[in-house]
Length: 238
Image (spheres, rainbow, N blue to C red):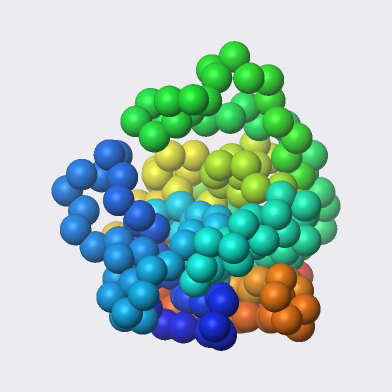
């Protein structure tokens, strides 16, 4: 694992896309997990305090002891950890805005046995800002060309698949999202551009350290997939 920050209490890593954080009944065939890999790399137990979906890459925090894990979990619950993502979405997004759209909790029948299926939708807020737009002279569906936007996303809440569900809700699904996305555009990126994976990356995370009270700021930058995306020609600033 690429380590972005490490001290006696906390480690922040750059999670690879396509890798589960921990063992799951959903993907029983998987043999590599972030928790076990990081534990073996550091030679000590690590404690997860939040999650990134399997296909999502970028900044991920682990505590190195149970007390710090509890303190970090409280920071997350209180909205005191600032998270920033980048995403490529279908279509042109021309202005910044906020999505305030409650989401019904997704129940995983294997892992969330205690989650009630009757629970009402929970508040969910996402801020987004367009940075650049991309025009590809490649036919897709009924259109002679394909249009995309590079966005900066900042979630206020942390509902499961929030960013993916919110962007699909406003008809700008994230490219590479096989659950909430657009299959035609996912196929275009895979077959025409050779870029396979979810184009959602946790690029920055910041918080006040719960033990030493110092500001911790971590930036993941781009990984191999994202370098391939950013280096495409025809990007223009919004």
